[in-house]
Length: 280
Image (cartoon, rainbow, N blue to C red; front, side):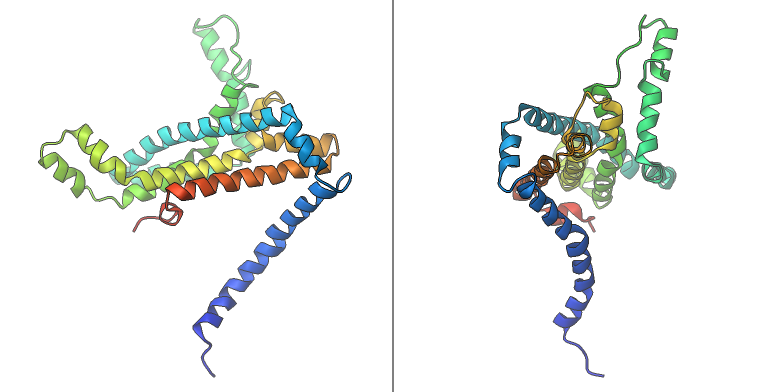
């Protein structure tokens, strides 16, 4: 039997995945774009309303602000966790890695509800503070931006830890040892030798968390209580409550474009291929 050319064999491997992408991803996206231009009438009326609406502008600003805060929180906490696991865990490293992966085995809905139990007016946190005499009345810890950001950091943290941990695993300790041997302090060796080598993992974790946060729905909807309307929840209101398919689709297209712009800007400063792949 004649051997197929390498290029043809390559396309035989790629075509099934490409067909799935076209049928289940690209075609629905084109349908959303079509609805945004044809409902309720043909034209760009939905996009005009979107750009002129102060509510939409506020929702987009809020979405980006929460995504930025979530990303910063995840990077700070995630870097500490990844650094400890990579450099100090020793025999308990498999256990600590398992604890990082454990949230993936629990539904996001359940994890978000757990924060309602913790942060509610009669929740564990408020009951503890009142019982200890720290406060007299329950604190408002949810249905505001604080509660949403806190819960989103909890949900998104593994997406920051894993890329940074994979990156740190490929860094040889000999570089830091050499710097210490040449007279650098532990802090200087970390700041000038170790930390710059971890930047690919930091950037990939930041990009992953930020992009996921832009379109996140469940946690902001539960912890925001209808008062913190991120753009994904605003889209849901337009479609489910007001049956405004045209504007909802236009907002979806705008969110997709905004996400693509973020990725394109990141690509100008970071080699995404090397950042998103594990270091060897």
